[in-house]
Image (cartoon, rainbow, N blue to C red; front, top):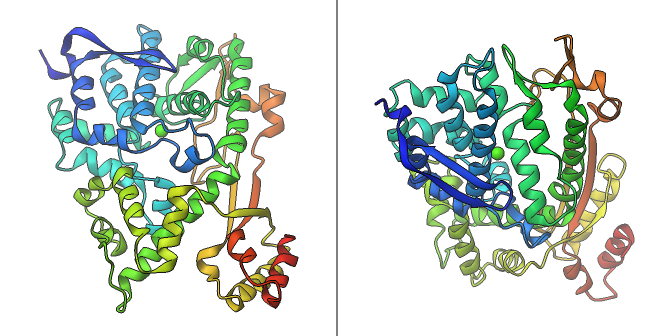
Length: 432
Ligand code: CA
C-alpha cells in the first residue's frame, strides 16, 4: 500500500479543549506530529507576550496546528463525493494544514521585526530541507514536499486547496479565533463553526458558503474584529513586545561593541545578530531558551540590558498614552531631548507603536495580507461576494483602523529629582 494511504491500526485521538477531540487515522499525520520540528512547536506560544495581559494565554502553536488540521479534516469529510472535490488532494490538504505554522520562531512578531526575518521562509526551509519532516513527506513522492510548501505559500495550482488554508474564512482563522478566545477567557471570538462547516461547498477555485449560512459568517467576521481590538492589539501585550524588542536591540548593540564583554555570551543569538541564520540555528532557539538568556542577563553588568530583562521577567512593563505621531511630532522630539537631558536613553525607554487591522477585506490585490474574499452561493447557483450581500460586513469592509500608543518607563521619570527641569517638561507632555 502506498504510504499516503496507510492507516493506523487504531485511530489516535488528542483531547482538545476547543474541538473536544482531534482524530488521526492517517499514518503520515501521526508520523509528522512525532517529528522533532513539529514537537518544537510546543515551545512556541501561539500568542507571544499576550499571557502578560490574559494569564491563560499560554497555549502553543502545537495546539493550534493540530486544531487547523482537525478543521480541515472535518471540512473534507463533508466534501467527499461532491463535484469539484478531488479526493486525491486530501492528504496534501491535511499535511499543509498541520504544517502551515511550522516555521514560527520564539515571539515571532518581535523577532521578525528586529532581525528582519520571515517565518514563512523557515516554514519552506523546514519542509524542503534536511529535516525529519522532509524525510516523511518524501515517502509520498519526491515532489510532495514541494506541493505542501506551495499550498502553504498560496502558489499551488489548485486554488480550492489553497483557500482551505488561507482565505478570509479558512481553517487557520477559524481555529485561532476560537482557541485564543478559549485560552484568554474573553467572551468574544465565539461563532457557530459547526454551522459554517455544514454550509461550505467546494467550487472550481475556492470554497464558497451557501447563502443560508450568511449570518453565521457575519458572526465570525464580527468576532474576528472584536478579537483584534480586545486581544491581539491589547496595549499591555504590546508593551511587553516593546520591551522584548528593546532587549534584542540592546543585546545586539553590546555584541557588536568592542568594549563590552558579556558575562553570559549570547551564543544562540549570534547568527541572528549577523543576519545569517541557518535552519539549524533557527530550530535551536525556542521560547524556553530565550527566557533562560533573559533570566541570566538580569545579572549582566550593562545596566540597560539587566534592567530590561528584569522588566520582562517580572512583568514590570512600560506605561502608555494615546499619541498621534502625525500631529504630535514636535512633542515627541521634545520628549526625546528631555529624556536625554535627564540621563534616560530614549532609544530604550521611549517608543511609538502603531497597530492596524482591516476587519474584512474584499479585494485589495498586491497587499501584504491579501486573502481570498468570501463568496456566497445563492440558490440559483450564482456567486456573490459577501459584502455585497451582507449590510453588516459592508459597513466594516476595507476600513482600516489604526491605534497609536507611546510607551515609556514611567517609574524612571518619577525617580528623577523634583527640581529637574527635564522631569517637569516630560510630565507636562505626558500629563503625569
Ligand atoms: Ca496559523
